[in-house]
Length: 133
Image (cartoon, rainbow, N blue to C red; front, side, top):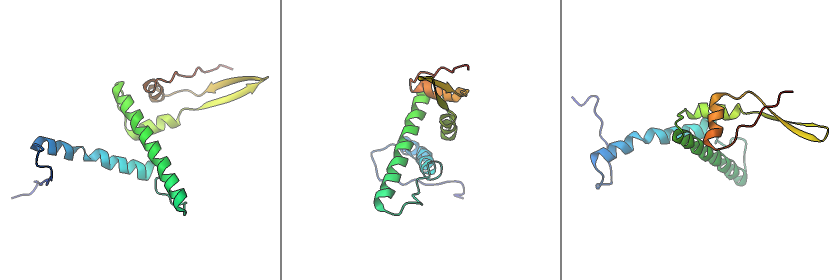
């Protein structure tokens, strides 16, 4: 008779039923964060043996995760909503080559997908001009 029902136990008695349910429904974001840290950012320090290197690796992974979440929030504020995987791919698609000719430095950027351009807009970074050579 209880098939399909579940119970939620909460130690904060001052919360309403709706607040408890909303907190429970937001747990997917925490689970997604762990998935990103473990798989996409490869936070498991498999190739490090000393405590100093393991801590350094985890700190770098955490900072990368934090920057990714900040970019995700900025994109949402600008009206663009994408998955963390698509955002990361768009950042990886940004390519810029530095060319030095006769003492002059020029920058050549690859074609830029729309999501990559949105990332730059959300961060208020001007889109680099592409040179035609």
